[in-house]
Amino acid sequence: MNKHDGGKRTARCWVARPFPERPPTRERYAPQRGGRTLTSRPVRPAGNTRDDTAPHHRLGCMTEQNNALPDDADSFNPAASSLAGQVDRAVMEELLSIRSSIDNIDATLVFLLAERFKATQKVGILKATHKLPAGDPGRESAQIARLRRLAEDAHLDPAFAEKFLNFIISEVIRHHEAIAEDHQTSSQQA
Ligand SMILES: C=C(O[C@@H]1C=C(C(=O)O)C=C[C@H]1O)C(=O)O
Image (cartoon, rainbow, N blue to C red; front, side, top):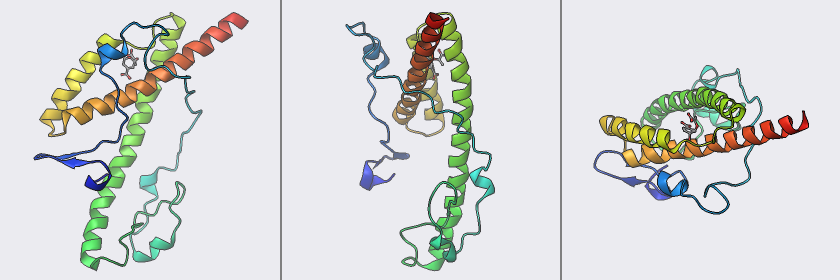
């Protein structure tokens, strides 16, 4: 993400725009015919996507020869770059060194998100079992206010933090709707 593909620089940090806009909580939950404004066909959570071959265990040495490796999920090449061969060697080394931190952070994000989704799946099952609504706007407002404060303390753009959380919550709610639908179908069949 950079200024050429939607990000913009502010005095304090880069502000990315990677997430689709999501209306504010109050609008999303405004009663209207047809139910929630955000509903679409629930997307079923992907099955067991666990990958025991964690990418951070597979980072090879970052030499220029590595550029020949294909850049897919099974053979991540940390040295892959469109800049290869066009940048001063020392600059490239510095870039790759910083990128190795970025790769570790990205891997951590994936694992953290996987853990979060494991927890929210449990909430989804609890809600479906007790016929509770998928979304909880009161809880979301409190989470968003808290994350905005944390983001400010961390010098992260609070608007970005809010969009990020909204993006995740939308997905969680879709999962919860799918779980409720499955639960209803199986109780009708029983
Ligand atoms: C996980 C829950 O369900 C939904 C998803 C939330 C989340 O991802 O944090 C928060 C509130 C709910 O809209 C919950 O109610 O705790």
